Image 1 (cartoon, rainbow, N blue to C red):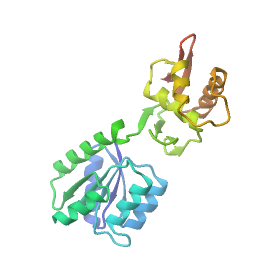
Image 2 (cartoon, rainbow, N blue to C red; image 1 turned 90 degrees about the vertical axis):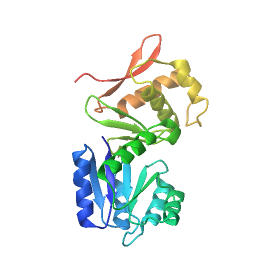
Image 3 (spheres, rainbow, N blue to C red; image 1 turned 180 degrees about the vertical axis):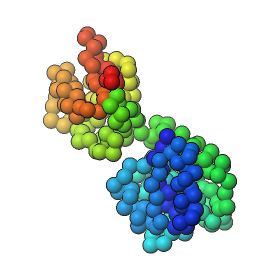
Length: 233
C-alpha cells in the first residue's frame, strides 16, 4: 500500500487517523505542526499527505505551497474544519489534490485517499515508476527528472543512465532493443559519451553495479537487447 504523512495538531485525531490508516494496510508517519512536517518531508519519501490547515508554527496553506515548490507530483489531501467556499478555493488553488472537511466519515476519507493515490500513479499526472526487486528493495524513478531511489536512498544517475533505467522499468520483463535505447538517448543531453552502441554497454554495466543487491538484474538477450527482471530468490 502507501506510505503516508499525517499532519494534524489534534493529538487524539492524529493518533486515530494513524491507527485507521494502518488498519487499512498503509504505513504512516505524522507531524503535529507545519515545521515538523517540512523536516519529515526533507528526509523521508512518502506517497501522499493528509494535511490540516489550522497548524501551529507554519500554517497548512504555507506547508502546501512549500510542498508544491519541491514535490510537484506528491498527492495532498486537505482535511480541515474550514468549510467555506473561500477556504476550499484557496486550498485547491494552493495545490491540494482533494479537500475534505471535519467532521468526516472514515470510509469516505479512505475512498478519496485511494482515488487520489491511484490518479497520482498515472503518467499523465506525473506519477512515479516503481518496481519491487527480488531482494525486497523498491526501485522508484521520477518520470520527469533524472532522479531515482532504492528504498529511500537516492541513486546517483546521469541523464542517460536515468533514461535507460526508466525505459527498462517501463518495459519490465520485456526486451528493450538497442535501437529503442539509442532513440530515447537522442532526446537526452550529452553527459560525456557519444551515445553509440559501444557506450550502451558501458551504461548497462554501470547500472548493473548500481542495482547490486536490489534484487533486480539487467539481462543481455543476445541479438535482441536488454531486459530488466527480478532475480530469483
